[in-house]
Image 1 (cartoon, rainbow, N blue to C red):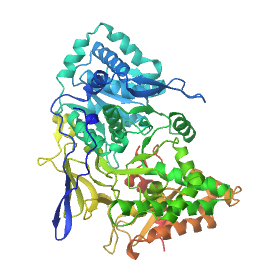
Image 2 (image 1 turned 180 degrees about the vertical axis):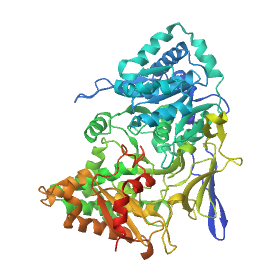
Image 3 (image 1 turned 30 degrees about the vertical axis):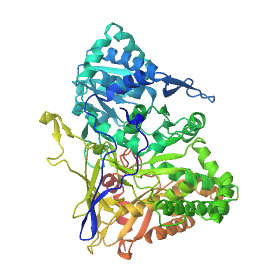
Length: 635
């Protein structure tokens, strides 16, 4: 029985274990039974058998034009495409267990080739389209990929000179050249039975994909995830998040994918939507104007986002209000939304009466003026957001709840097939990353490190020198490297990274994440990195948000100030100092930021400062801006 066929589950309370009065472990029993046979390759064919006319995907008919149209793809049509491309992969000589790499933006072809590769018994290896030639070559060499599919001819050309250094790579296909269609043509002589046989030998324990961590330090490592890992993740997520996946409403559930499918977060949601027969579209461009056009035309009911996007939407809305002379009105509306969201939270936990009559009226007044505009920026129909990657923060979570968008915040890693904790419906705890996903145990070690156990925990790291996968650990527990806390209801709060805890000269431990997250939410700040390890006090590097700073220059008559001189502008420095002062209220005096400096050029993925998922590579940043850091510690 599919997860889609089950009735709405009751909220299951976590089982808690205490030590010295503090919660040290939380466990939520599974909502979905473990999958005993079959694989992800079966999902398109199962959908075609059970609901052949259900729309599972939509693809752009005229990409790049102003009048964007989406062509629906039924379950039967998608299964036929998957079968045809799988037969083409077999015709090209790929054998069960071979690795096939996919290097493309978030496109229909990405999802099609993913499922086709599984149907042919292959293992997929995602590669970020922004990866350098060196990074790509490393992943292809380490994984032993025999084939590579890229999106563009320019990507293929860049890798051309490296082909001699990748001895296992025998095939390269290019989406924009129509090579997926060519594969389907090549496979015409292969029997359907051949694909059925290959699918039949796959099971939950079979390796499905090698996802290489983006690597905040060192070379990326390939995380070996099985078909069973994904089933444990998606089946429990579908059952838990029933408002998204299985609520019976007048609106067809749908989502527009635009986060990279090379990242486990986007990939997991794409597979979950196929499992639940939720209509999915793909938006390959992350440019604001392109994404807004796709959102307007597709009109999804839910989105998966990282906090950075929600921060940008909020800051852009406020900047727009300020340009129209309505900044104070926007600020009042934001305050009402936050109070409304917090009142809803207390009501759902039974600790308060809920929004007052006055608060409901105030929210109703501001809805057409502010909140509806924000919802319209996300397509107009979005009611739910799945948010991960880093903590969103209580202020923004409460604001969006009050504005009519429920945020399901989660926490996970590549090694855990994405989420291990998530906000349970009807029981949000703002500022946390939720409770354990059903079937998952979360434990806090003596030093505060978060330990995880569950069916979605990966098999181990890929090591070709050791002959394949090296098991993650003998006891099934995975040490995340993150520092966290469990409250008395089993909600997890992530407070920092174990390796990123700073220890000042005076011996004070400083977790940089709370300070950095607060600063990053400021409309003028794109990134913030806190410094202080083995230093006399704490400092910070700040980078400027291009849109935010453009708006600030317009509103403060700073057009004549060249961008490269903004770092020395006294008024800008004063604004940022106030932001730092606000952040310092979160911590004690020894943990507070004493000095900061502006990095005009910012941190970029191209220079290696950021991972593709926008996380800081601290060692790279410290090395690149060593002179600026030393200047902060001069008397």
